[in-house]
Length: 579
Image (tube, rainbow, N blue to C red; front, side, top):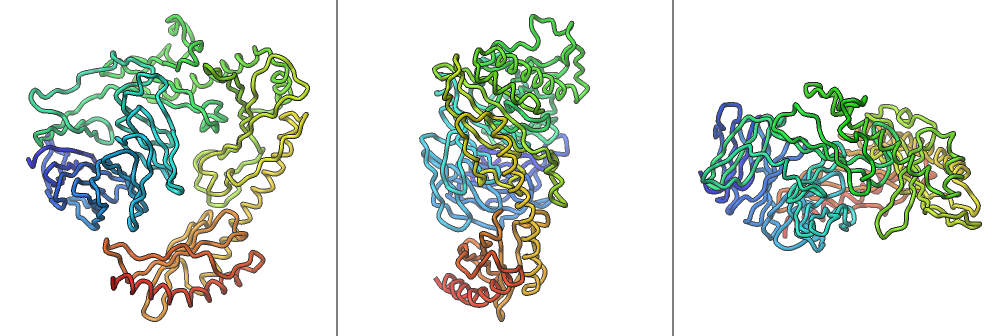
């Protein structure tokens, strides 16, 4: 059986396993027992990890032979299409079309953009698992922490760390991201002993289980053993679900604040006939939505729990969220702080304001407000928008808690937050908050802020149309784009040629277009590096440009610039291939 199985994953009714002797196998799982349909050995040493992105179009494998291989996935087989030598053993791997992130021996994580030398993002933790979301990488580490790596700047910060001292000796072994929520599993559950959650679902008398995988429906569990064997079992797997609900959420379909409430919904049995228990963190010990075992007499989602109704769990989460909002508001109304009482009284007319009181040990108490901004439907601003949820912008206002009214109270801390998808149209990071004037209250500040926001959002919508006209003007020189962002017009790719030299022109636009010119990248369709990757130019931004030009003149100037630059790029490609 080719030795120990080190990793398995399930995709499209197929199971893919990697082995300690360098082989990768593909299994048909449609039958009662897994059936081997392909075995390949491209790696020279143990294949330690496998990864398939959500698109399911590629398989990435990492190995002790210091390579990462990219595989195309067909119905009956996988086929290696690229090999990347990264000069060190690969132990954990995640990847997409733009970048591969992996951990090796030692601390930190490596970031490899498929062509240059891998960059080492160092932090004092050993990485055990990885999850990639956009330009952010999340690393589950020793010390029961999660590190967030910004792939644009190659910098890291602590996304999460265990709150208890004992957790410092624990490790996070798995992180997954689904619908914008990060799930983590490790050698301990934060704040929960968890002993009654342990259920024996499977056992092998003589073999060590090295890897587990389930199908998309969670009805089949696959186990790999140290002897290289696979087992399949159909089972109702016990669950322990942890929901990170955003504190001060602005609407039922997505909140916009920077802190979270963790609710653990725990299943104690192997079947889901019994209602969940809800557990909150130590900061919210006084929050008891269902107290004294009286849930059967109260009107709540647990009173008539029905395990066959999938809507009941969602109803329970919404109910807990609403109860928590009311609990926080009641706490804040009881605070003896004249300034807070005045601020609340000035904002009573606004709908959707949520509040939260932070009372962490050894830190001063604070009250946070999440104030929804702009009485306008942002989803309808851009024609053809594919946003599924209402896009919102909130102002987070944080006041320190004091016992007496001061004649010169300190200004609150202010921060804009928005729906994640809104950054395709408008970036709150680029928005400069107006100054807080002494003696000002929040209601006054909001008037100025909303006026500025509305003006800049209208400018952002106008910029979309300007980018669209510019792309259309480029088509008169290069023909129709072969790829383009049809909604926000943030990127476009054209096919161009100079004699027999054919190349692609990639354009990416900032939200401040035409103030800032688009970034150009040339990509040869005839020259490839040693890994088989098409050769690209560096980012090109130094060319004639003026935001006052008409789109047609902008296109003319870029066409003239590329007529000369493509010759330099061709020469560069030829020199690289001769090395």
